[in-house]
Length: 434
Image (cartoon, rainbow, N blue to C red; front, side, top):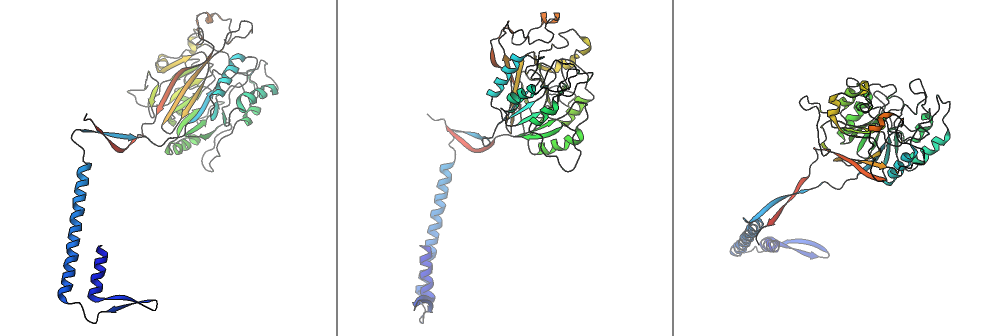
């Protein structure tokens, strides 16, 4: 309306557009509008403008009044979660025990249970093969076929750590299978190496799986991985990835303790991973996070729930089918019994067939330890115990003793990233009036 009035005012005062032969021509008035009539039109224009502005002011005032909270209302902030994220599942197993020196019923039961979890990737902490010959000169293909069927084909992505029982036999391990040259090509390999910087050794490298960087470090012999691994960890951490390191021999254990506090343990702690996984010991152990603080060197949690940054959690998982070997303190071997401070750091331990699933999102790393109990058949002439005739077994209980056959949760643990929090999207108003 304002525009029409303004146009008419302009035309009355000065002229108008006229269509002449398809062309618009502006003609001025030969006789200009009388001064009185021009003044009247201008006054009408300003009057309408004032009425419009007053109406707009009244509308805005009313809207603000209606939106203001009533004194009887409670205002509650609504915390909107981050968009739904993809969860990557990684299954972890160690010492699966293909071969005559392993416990076959446990191996097959664990493999079936692992497949049923339908993971996105398999992380194998080795060993694979437990064969009976001294200094074998070859690796029988039957071992490799069993590995392919159970530990390769079911899993779309596979990461393998090199273990001493799979490397060539030596004086320390005369029954090592020497199968690693055939096993290694069956994994999915590592991510491409950067063109610059220190390169890892053979059997070492990193692989990004979903929200996680997995770093594999070789134990034989051990060599400080800091130069090649630290830059990759720092880059991954800037991207918000979780950091998991995998080795074969544990840096921390109560099973067969060797003091690695100033070597392996110190070097791994300095890399500040979220989780360190190892096999080798035929048992399960989980330790509380090791903090860098001198006041609270260990962050304990009865619930198994921790915050990222509390320190690395060390886990030993060697229950994939190898025979159970008792902890040194159970065998009364003082030389390899862990000191008190290591036991103070221990959260859980057990002798059992088991595996772990890690469900990893951007904000949470959740671990579930699955206990796998096998029916004890007295006629199969197989025993899950290492050196089953030893007297120390008379006082040692296996985790599955007295429990039914099947798969069950042994324990759960969780690490939350405290830097990611929900954000306030909109206030929620609750009217408490009846």
